[in-house]
Length: 560
Ligand SMILES: Nc1ncnc2c1ncn2[C@@H]1O[C@H](COP(=O)(O)OP(=O)(O)OP(=O)(O)O)[C@@H](O)[C@H]1O
Ligand SMILES: CCCCCCCCCCCCC/C=C/[C@@H](O)[C@H](CO)NC(C)=O
Ligand SMILES: [Ca+2]
Image 1: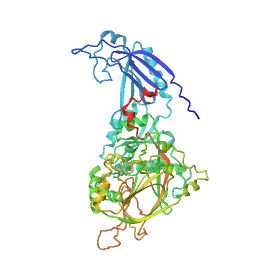
Image 2: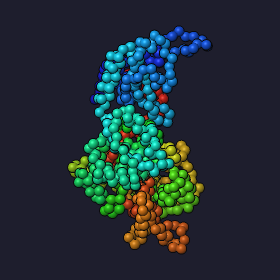
Image 3: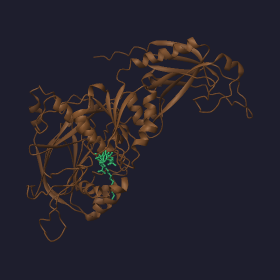
Image 4: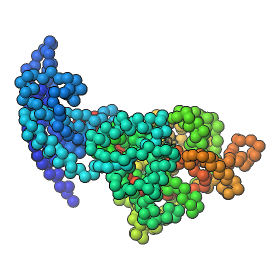
């Protein structure tokens, strides 16, 4: 079928207004606000007190306008933050002005809140402009109006509360978003509140201020609540889960901030706040993890056994060090060079979702994530779910592994800007399963270092990677209740350890029977697990990483 051309945007208002003492043609249509200088002063050479004028056009998509308000006159120009010398005649005729705040893209996928103040000859015209812009904003019904915010005051460098108050709250208030804010008092406070207490009907979204662990609390609260309200038993690993309707915003204030970085492209609180304000929506896959018939946890980023499990176990004892704990524990774990034996079985994904080694990175509006596919979540009442879930042949791999990692998304973060699996997709219903077999320390180091540069970390004979919908892991020496000594210390659920038994050499510690699973920064209490990817189970206030060209070229021009 032929694609119909888009109708041109509807012209709503057009006037000559003044901007920084220059006359501009200002236009509002249903898609853009634009201003273009119409008057240029004669060019002068050196010594010119004004300098030559740049005849520039500016376009701001309406969907990226944050707010508009009438501006108090006789105050510093908000364009520059400095007092402007306004010629008498202009000042007298332009005493009415309005200020538009909008999103501006800067470097490295960061967004900033920029402002333009436009001066009008009379108040009626000024109010007409304010009203016309507000009317357009009110049509953007995807924007949240009321949010529930949880702040972890102890995430990362303990700056969560300050980041929210100083950088985020002013943006929400400018965008007329009201909030109920809860500063958590203990681990799992946010999870429990969402699961049982919060009146979710009141809100258009939930915001989490903290790191990946705090985000994990939020999704556990929301997913469990949604399943409970719909009568879905989370212990039943075959049952499809019901997608959560509320979107989640992440204000990064943790140590890794992988989920924020991999869905936005930066770990900048202002950028994240602006993605919330404009009402972005990014669906995301979630893995459910079971041990036999018992539900353990959900994971959206890294599920890692061996190296990343051991790093996390060691780093939990060093929480007081803050984000540096991961570096110290990383080096220590690398030097210990432990490998683990076990069997991995997995159900490969359909070929139409690509492979972990193609170069099709998941970006804003990703075609693979939009594909209608058998891998996608099927609603509860559709019988076909059991067919699609069991179709395909399970593969089985046995061996000795330094690391077994499953990544539902790239897991890009400041430590590894392209991530553990650079071509993994946020919302395709699959995870990338990375098996790093026993190899020399030197080879393992080469593999690890490739996470930090442009080289392909999968291009080693001891690394295999598969795109999967489900997998199971069984350690060579199965967990039994007598072997598994679950010692729970007070506080966080992270503080569960296996008593690690060296089976082959009981008198030494050279080869431990089990590692632990690092599940988005939490330690799982079992080594034998069953994992299933649930396509697009949750939604974030994000849009995926934008192509760099969106930042380089003025976004608006091509669309007009
Ligand atoms: N008030 C609180 N007191 C103690 N722990 C808390 C509190 N609120 C939340 N937590 C727990 O703190 C843990 C770590 O939080 P968070 O994820 O925000 O930071 P992080 O671990 O430094 O960062 P990252 O997860 O990105 O590595 C989470 O597991 C969360 O359950
Ligand atoms: C000895 C040199 C080591 C260099 C290794 C660099 C590799 C870094 C890859 C980091 C990927 C992190 C994936 C995210 C995991 C999060 O879920 C979790 C909780 O925040 N963070 C960690 C560190 O486990
Ligand atoms: Ca995925």
